[in-house]
Amino acid sequence: MNGMAPQVLLQNRKPDRIATLDEYRESGGYEALATVLKKHNPKEVQQMILDSGLLGRGGAGFPTGLKWKAVADNAPFPRYVITNIDEMEPGTFKDRILAHSDPHMIIEGTILAGYAVSAQKGFLFVRPAYESSALIFERELKIAAEAGFLGKNILGSDYSLDIAVHRSGGRYICGEGTAQLNAIEGRRPNPRGSPPFATDKGLWQRPTVLNNMETLACVPHIIRRGGEWFKSLARIKGAAGTKLYSACGRVNRPGCFELPMGARLSEIIEEHGGGLPPGSEYKTCLPGGASTRFLPKEFYNIEMDFAPLKAIGHRLGTGAVIVFDQKTCLVGAALNLIEFFVRESCGWCTPCREALPYIRDLLWRIENGEGREEFIPRLQAMCKHTWKSFCVFAPGATMPVESLLTYFGDEVREHISQKKCPFPPPSPSPSEGEGRGGGERNHAQTRH
Amino acid sequence: MPKELQEDLEKRVAGAEHPREMAIDAMVVLQNYYGYLSDEAVQEAAALLGMTPAELEELATFYEFIYREPVGKYIIHVCDGIVCWMNGHQSVLDYLCLKLGIRQGETTPDGLFTVLPVCCIGYCDRSPAMLINRQVYGPLTPEGIDQILQKLKDQPPRGAGRVK
Image (tube, rainbow over all chains, first blue to last red; front, side, top):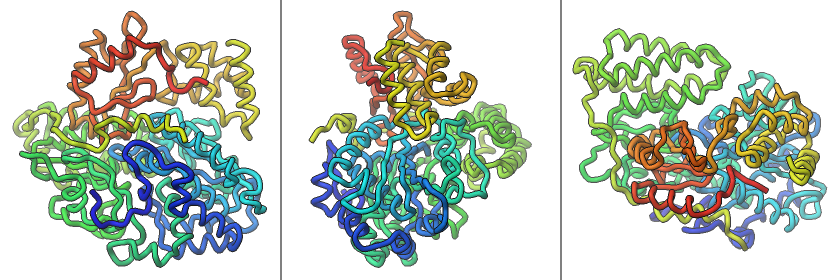
C-alpha cells in the first residue's frame, strides 16, 4: 500500500499483532541504546537529535533537541521523562497504530530521551480509550526490563531508569503538556503557566521533558543511522524524517501511512487513502486534526510539513487528514467539532468556558434555520476572545469555525438565507478500511 | 472493600513515588468493585492515597471514565467524534438505543447496559465505532450491533476497565 516509501517507524507492522522484542531487535532495535551507553554522554545525544532536525510530532513542531537542551546542566534531581500517548485530537490515531505495531521502539525512544536529560523515572501517559495499548506497554516494559534494557544499571552501565504506565481518566486537556504534569501528580489537570517551563520545573517541580510518542519513536533510528540519513528521508528541503500521516472521513481506505515528511496532501488522500468514494468530490479537509483550519481546495497539492502549511497560514497539526466531500455540510461539521471542544474544555479560563458554548449556540441556530447575518461577526468576535485564554487549546478549538467563516462564508450564508441546512444529513459511505477485520483488539492478548 | 483488594491497592500505592500518582488507578479499581465510584469508595480511595475526599472528588468529577453514579455492567460509549458523525453516528446511536429501549445516559432496567457519549476515541479507521468497557467495536452496522449485544448478554462481564 505504501509503494516505494521507506518504512522506518512502521517497519515491523503486521496485520494482526505487535512485533516482539526479538523481532524489534532483529531490525536493529536497542542497538542505539547499547551504543549510546558505551560511547556517548547525554549532551552528545541532545546534539545528535538537534542536528537531525527532528521536530515534535504532536502538532507544535518544536525542535526536540532544543527542548532537551533546555534542561540545565546543574538542574536538580530526580528528573523525569514523559511520553505523551494521550492521543485525543479528533481524527487522529497514528500513535495507536504505532503502539500496536512496535511498542519496543517507543520504549527505547523513551529510555534514550531519559538518558539525554539524565532522568530517573519515565511515564507513558495513556488515554482510557487506548486500554489495549496500556496493556501492551505494561507487558512489554516488563519484558524490556528482564532483558536488561530498563531498571537498574541498564546493560551494565551507570544509567538507571524505571518507566511506568500512567492511565488517564480521560479528558482532552490532559494532552496539553503542563496539564499532563498536573494529571500525573493526581491534581485537577488544568494547564500551568510558563515560565517556569517543564524542563526547569515540571513534574513535582523537577526538570521534566515531555514528548509526543511518534517523536520519541524516531530517536533510536536517528542515533543508529545518523542525522543526515534522517534528513534524507524527507521529501522536501529543510524537512526531516518520515511522518505517520492518516486519512479518514470521506475516503475509501481510511488508515495510517508512513510517508516521507513533505508528502503531498493529494498523494495521501488518493494513493494511500484510496481516494473519495463514488459520487463524492473533494471539498476540503482538516489537515491535522480538529484544531487545524479547513484547508481551501486550491491547496490540494500542498506539501504536508510544518513550514509549507505555516507559509499559507495553516498548521500541520498531527498530520491526520479528515476529508470532507461536496455533500457534507461544513456548518454541521463545525458544530460537531465545537461540541467536542465545549465538552472537553477544562473550564479554567472564562474566554474558553464562555465563548465556546456561545459559538455552539450560534452555529446550532444557523444549522437549524434560525441563523441571522449578524451572527457572523459575533462568531468572529467570540473566536478572537479565546486567544486570551491560558493555554493554546482554546484558540485551537476555534480553528474550524474561524476557517469556516473565512473560506466557506457562502455556505454559511446559504443556511441563513434558506432558513435551513441545504445539505442532506450525514450518512455512512461504504469503505474498506484496514481495521475492518477487527483483529486489532486481539493485540493486547498477543503472547510470545 | 474486601481485605484482599485493600492490600493489593495499598501495595500499589506504596510502589509509587508519590501516592497521588495512583489516584486514577485506585478510583478505577474501586469503581470496578462497586460497579461505580460510590461516596463510600471515594472515602476509601482518599484514605488509601493520603488525600482528603474533597481532593479526590476534584479528580473524580473531572474525568469521563470515572462514574460517580450507578452504571450498567456494560458501559457503552458511542463515539460522536467528527469522523463517526460523518459516518452515521446518529443512526448507530438511534439503533442501539432502540434495541436497548433506553436513551443515551440511561441504564437498562436489568442493570446490564448503560449508553453514554464519548468524544473521538481514535478509531477513525474503524468508524463508526464505540467502546464497551474500554474495548473497541467497529465499524458498526445494525447486524453487528445485534450480534455484539447478544454475545454480551450470553457471557459474564469483564469489568469496566481493568480488574486485577
